[in-house]
Length: 369
Image 1 (cartoon, helix red, strand yellow):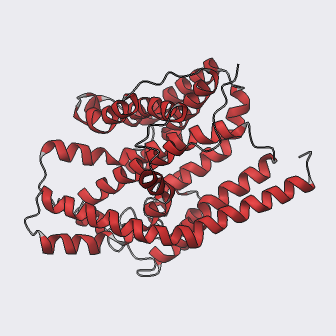
Image 2: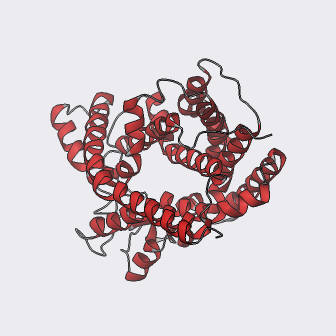
Image 3: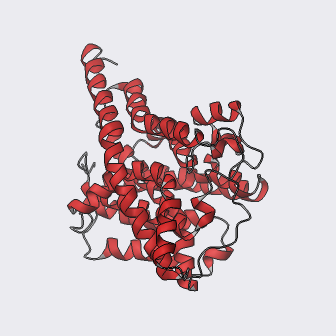
């Protein structure tokens, strides 16, 4: 039995909006370390803000907004797999057109001001080969200076690896829940071994082997939602998201468990599946959907705006407490959203539409593909 889900699920755009706010909260809370990371090596920079422990914990876990992006992406692509009839080439074209142009342009614009000079994650600077590796979405496999070419670009490279793997995974799972669960469990075991025996630090965390369980959580949630009609429980989505975003960072499991991003992924997978089956009005609202629609552009542009917004926040509230940090957050979100609306209209939307038109044309010419 197959439970058909709509091709577009508006509440999932709202969840993407939450994800980008989490990422921005983390980078805002890092203060000057993040604000200057594109122009100098800020690894040893002291904390900028004095925050209460609970706020520091929540902000510190904001990086798992990327985990939330991965789960939503895996969920939507898995549910759409049955609707796609254009073959792998059309699928690959649409995926590349969706993330490639903005990513490549960001790499160019972040590189122009300082060239190959040192910066965060590249204390000795970057080389032309590092830039080539980053352009080919290979920085997560290198785990070195190529990660610095596009700030935060590791997540885009992981997405590309997952895009390539998804058709194989969907075919292997064949819509069966037990296969999806088994593959997810196997990937968790591999990630756990890799976490203990692989390279450490950032290189380990960004590697697709470490992030694969997160993507498979989204795939599994999609298979469950397509096979089982999920009940609508009022407030369940909000509760699950609150547990993941606010509750988990407060628990001791966050300190001792080797792979906390997987715990986060398991919890939010439930929220994503329930949101798809029965969209909560607040997530499917127009502001949340718009925020999610431009979230990828916000992700790429916000690093360029952190320094200016921090300068303004400190000028308005020089005490460097939580009030200054929240002012910095409000300014960064506002400026990033405004600029992202422009870049989405100029870059993302035209490329998505071009790929869609080309896919339709190719499918019409080669219907048997």
